[in-house]
Length: 377
Image (cartoon, rainbow, N blue to C red):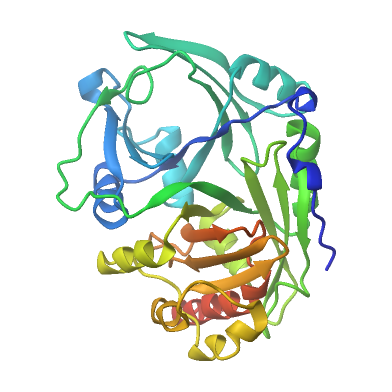
């Protein structure tokens, strides 16, 4: 494997033509936003904070905004039979449409990226209400996914103009310790990974952070390749996967078969106490991938001393990996819809800045067990 670390992914702001302050929101197009919102409230502990729909003058869709820590999820459903949203859900199932990025200047962000070759999703425009103004612009990335640039410096409302504050009323809508989006992972087609890495480098000024080839990410049956790109200050990181040749169908191929295009595979969410977070998520019915008990037999020999009790990690099926900066703990949910597409990673970083390379084999074998149950391996 060629591993590349970019010591100055923490780039000098003066040289960063696209300064990003983090992930503003992630928007899903879904078949039934009201029911999806209930799931995220009851199972993941998100709070319903804002709503837009017919009651607010929006005639073609309804959107629910959920928040926990610095994470915002927007769940949008169409009210029309032939809209772009309806077509998106029919083709992909419930899936991520927008990865919105928080910026100081949405117009300049659009100008800088489109002049470098980005395809415009929509030109900059500003919306206003009694709480101030928000400026938005957008560009396309892989598949039908969009990066929306959000400039909200002068806004104090619940989300943005057009939305009204709304409370959940879900008894179990109490937080589980989720803090912020750590990274979003995209799956692209055969031979397309380098094209999209170049897109992020040339169009958005990102740096290549890590490279994993099929020797690093493979099992007896399947393989994939992955590269991680990061923006200047390191706040936004996008691993990009493509399939690699194997004896059987890889998880990336399975995703592409069911999503019917490149798209967001999983969203990694940070927590400060993964044991408490995962314990509560499991209690609420969230399903996670599991690894065999043998994974833990030589864990401490492989990764060294850790603060956590090994038996508690084994009981929760948590994975551990170490790099030069420290270690991390992570676990992956099963897909959160019926199609085997989007899932979540819960991650706690204790110094580590990597992505769990040492866990790849155990993780992908557990995914293959699920693929075999679905008849898709």
